[in-house]
Image (cartoon, rainbow, N blue to C red; front, side, top):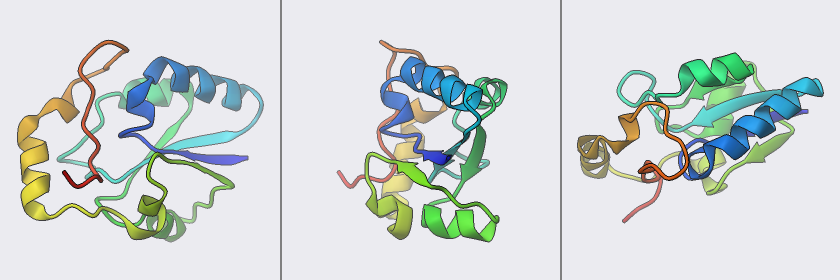
Length: 127
């Protein structure tokens, strides 16, 4: 299987669970990529090395529909694990002002979050 795993609101909710899932999926020959609406420069997820060590790729979509970005990169997934499935085909629904406020919060840049630590608010939800 080729599995696309969302970051904000999915991976961030329980990183240890998803790390174990990625390791187990890889051990059974499956492909797992973290596919995120984040920007590859401004919104790095902070756990890139750990995901790379687990063998998961990271696909940054910069607010664009995840399915569209994956297709452009020659990627296809048999399973999408996503807390807001609309993001797969619609992309981000937040405006520039909301994005600026989210970035100013700076919680999303905290390196190597674990359970019990402050989590990133979802990038794709309107408040």
